[in-house]
Structure formats: C-alpha cells, structure tokens
Image 1: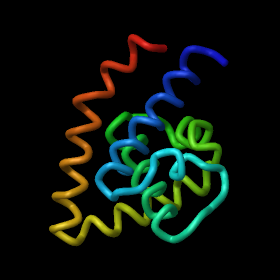
Image 2: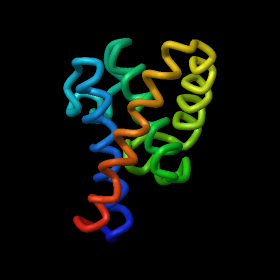
Image 3: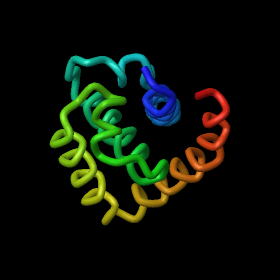
Image 4: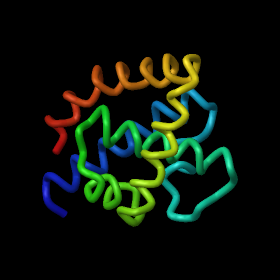
Length: 111
C-alpha cells in the first residue's frame, strides 16, 4: 500500500473515530465492510462526508479508504448535505469539521 493510500485510511479512521465519539458508536464498527444497523450506516455516511469535505479527499479515495463503491460515497455525501438544512445538525456537523481540520494535518507525518 502506498503512502497516499495509507494516509487515506488514516484519515478515514480519524473521521470514524470522531463521529463514533460524537455518536457513542465504536469507530471499528463504522469501518466494518458490512452495512450494519441503521445507526452505523448514518455514522458511516457522516464519516465519509467529513473525509470528502473536511479532508478534501476525492470520492474515489474515500471509497477506497472505507472499502465502499464510489457511488455509495456519493450517495452518503448527498444525504448528509441534505440534512444540513437542519440548523442544529448543521452546527453539530460544523463542529466535527473543525475537529477534523484540527487533527488531520497531524496524520501527514504518519504516512
């Protein structure tokens, strides 16, 4: 695995960990290849959205990092973007984006 792929996987784990902490779900469950229960699907969608938006990862790179199809990531991003119409959800998600932006530069040294 190349350094970019390793960084992408680390970014995905960071997003899953932050979302997992916020939603009281295990990050390992978010990263599982199986679909899982509804809460895990939503948590994974949020983590994929954060990886794409806050970490500027392409949909293809997010798909690789989460072991999903690119179309699944696009669907997830679309769903989360729609949910941002709710002001409370939007501010919650914005706080997560700020958390990602704080920690993701640290990962470049691990790749």
